[in-house]
Structure formats: structure tokens, C-alpha cells
Length: 268
Image (tube, rainbow, N blue to C red):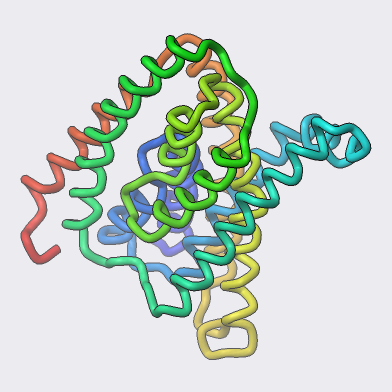
């Protein structure tokens, strides 16, 4: 298999899995056992490609927020996005400075997929009970914004957790009972988060041997593939959650993770 074809496949995998609550990072790291290991810059940059799809899909919402700062609701929403991003940035930098690196073994990712599936089913149950008790609530509170910021870091530290899944369910459990509102906030906060992470990694490798060793053509192919497939996946997901719960994704995580635990050698 050529390197560009492998990069294309990785970009497609990233685009499909970034916003579905099944863990894009987990799937990427697993796929790279067969398609070849990639740098952190590659993995984070193609995630930014998927985030670009959200910019396109939500451009009207983003434009309204950007031009409506004088309106209290828009201003509060932007401040809450800023809070969530600030929490993620501070904790994320602390984790990076502590020397954390993504695991290159399948075992911890498989366990994260399984346990995440179980957690999602439980969270779905309690979120439904909370929605029944509170009614439909679309407001993003300061508590929700803070917890979403923390959840993004937790998902980044434990591949297989799923950034979108963790943040959406945290929002639902913390009081934003509207699935559409919770999903929109977590998708929008992903825009500055992933672009900042990509920029941080890029600045770290510019002018270093890592930059010379990076296959920029492969990265570009994967970036475009990720953006296109993410656009399709997000459009589908936004329709899906209008009439469905996330249970199917939890079952997929559990089955996929269990299959990896059973089939992969213990040292993988």
C-alpha cells in the first residue's frame, strides 16, 4: 500500500469518527498498527480538518455570534465558549508539560472503548431521567461550560474515550437536556480547541528535524479527506439525534472494544 493511500484511509477514518461518539483518536491509533505510525502533528492536524467541516456547517451560527456581540444571549454564549476553551487550554498545556504522550498499544484503547460504551449506556439512562424531571432545557450554564472544558482534556488523555461523546453527555447530565443544544455547544467548542492544538503542535516542530521528516503531502491528503468525510458524518449525525438516542454507538464501542481484547495479542 502506498503512503498516500494509507494517509487517505486515515483521513477518512478520522472524518467519520471525529464527531460520532466512538473515539476518533482510538480508531486512528488502532488503524496505524496496520497503516503505519504517524506523528502527533499528523493526528492532530487531520482532526483539525474534521473540525473545518463544522465551521462550514455552522457558519451561519458562527456569523450570528460574531456579529451579534452586542446582544446579551450571544455575548453570554461566546463567554461560555471562551471559558470552556480556557479550561481546556490550561489543563491541556499542563498535561503536555507533564510529558504525557498517547499510548501506542491497543490494549488501553480497547478497554477505554468497552468501558466508554458501558458509561454511555448508563449516562444515557440518567440523562433521560434528568430530562424527564427538568424538561427541555437548551441553556448552556457556566457549570456546563466548565465541565465540557474538563471533559475535552480527559478525552484527550485517554484515547478511546471520545471527545464528542464525553462532552455531549457531560452537558446532558449537567443540565442542558436538549440534545441539539448540547451537541451544538460541544461541536462549536471543538473549533478553537482543535485549531489551537494543531497550531501548538505545528509551532513545536517548525524548524526542527521533525518538520523535515514529516510527509506534508500525505498530511495534506489526509486533511482534505478528513474534512470531506466529517462534513457528511456531521450532517448525518445532526439528523440522527433528532429521533434517536446514542445507544447504538455505545453498543458499537462495546462490541469493537471486546473484539480487540479477544483478538489482539496481549503485547499489542
